Image (cartoon, rainbow, N blue to C red; front, side):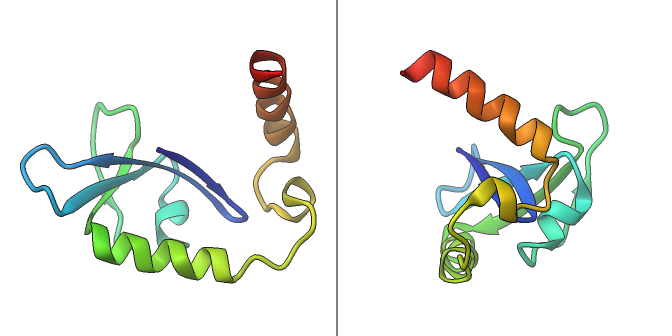
Amino acid sequence: MWIFMKNSFVSVVQHRKYPDVVIVRARRKEHLEALGFQPVCTKNADYLWRSLVTKALFYRQLELAVKAIDYPNFKNASKLDHGLLMRIWELVYQELS
């Protein structure tokens, strides 16, 4: 699952051995810290930063992020690069319209 939030972009996948754990991955350390997770640096990986967290904890942090939504336009409110968000929006628009 890819998740774009106002101050972060993360990829979340199931842990292979532990059914109640997800791996929250990010390209930037601060994106995991924004969710309240302790990032660990991994070498030679697509996502350099990772946090192993229970699904329950991830759900709670995601719930807080949803409750904090206070904007009518995500791209304008986001601290992520606006050009990047526009390119992603355009690609999805072209493919799914």
